[in-house]
Length: 451
Image (cartoon, rainbow, N blue to C red):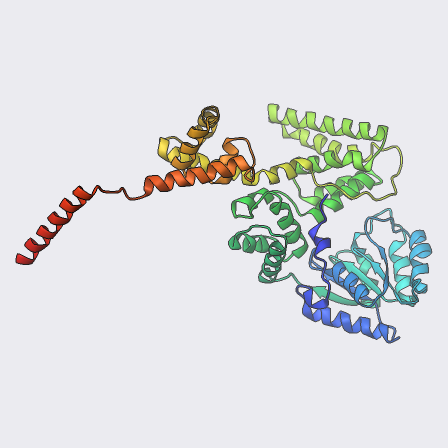
C-alpha cells in the first residue's frame, strides 16, 4: 500500500500547521514552560474530527524532543491497564532523559468495557511528572468528562477555513505531480467541512484515478470519511456485546452497502481460522436478506440484514484479538476510483465520434467501439481514423488496447498529426492559374476605383 499522505505530509514545523493559530501559539508556550522545568496543567484539545488535535500534540513532542506514550481508542483503556501502563509512563522520563508526552487520545470514546478508565486517567493527570495532552471531539456529551474540564485546560479547535485547506491541497498535489482542476480542489476543500485530514485522504484517493476534476468528485458521494468508518469497524470487530455493536452501527450513518464492503474487505485481516468462515457466513446471510428486500420490497427484513452484517460478524469470533491490524480500504472502491479517468475518456471519445457519425455516445460505446477495434487493426486505417477524429495519445491507446507511452501509439499519433496538417494546409495553385487570378483581381480593383 502507498504511504498515506496524512503521514507523508505531516507538518515539520508549527508554521506548516494549518488553522487554529492561537491554540498553536498557546500550546507552544505550554510546552516551552515544561521544557524550562515549570510544571503545567494538562491540555484538553477538543473539537471537530480532522482539525489537527492529535497532529499538534505529536508535533509539539517532536519539536521538543520528547518521547510519546499514546493511549488511543484502538486500545483497551480500563482502570487496570491505565494505572499499570500509563501510570508508569507518566511518572518516569524517557530513555533519553527527556520528558515524555502522555497522550490520551479521544477520551470521549471510552466504551462500556473500559470500566474505571475515566477515573484512572483523572488520577494520572493530577499526579503526573510529565506533560499530558488529552483530545476529544466533544467534552460536553458525556458527564464522565466533567472533571477533565476542571483538571485540564480546554482549548477548542475550530473548523479550518476551506481556503486554507485548498491552498495546502494544491501544494501537496503539485509536489506529488498530480493533475487537478482549481475549481475541483476548491470544491473538495469546501465539502470537507473544515476537516483537513479527510480532505487530504480524499485528494489521495482521487489522484489514483487520474486528474482531479469536478466529475471525479462524484466518486466521494455516499462515502463517509474514513476516520468515522474506522470507529464503526473497531466496534464491530472488537465489540463485547450485541447492543454495543448495534448502537455503533446506527450511530455511524453510513449506508449498509458501504459498510458491507468495508466489513467484507477486513474480515480476513481481523480474524483467523474458523472465525473467518463464521464471519463470512453471517455476512452472506445478511446479503440473502438484502436480496429478499429487493425482490419482495419488504423492508422489515432490514433489521435482520443490518444486525447480521454488524453484530453477526463481530460476535462470530471465538476468541479475543488484542493486536491491532489497520483496516483496509475496500478494494472494489479503489478499482472504481482508478477507472474514473478511463470512463470519462471513453465518454468524451464516444461524444467526439458520435458528433461526426450522427450517433449518440451510448450507441458508439455499445456498438461502434467493438467494430472500430476490428477495422483499426490496419495501421493505415488507424492513422486516418485518428486524424479524422483528432484523437490524442490516450484515445489511440484505448482503441488499440495499448498504453499511451508505447512506441506504436506515439508513432501513430505523429503520423495522424502530420496527415491532418497536410489536409488542412492551403492548396498550391499552378503558376498559370495564379497569374490569371492575379490579373482578374487587378481588373476588379481598377473597376472598383472607377466607381
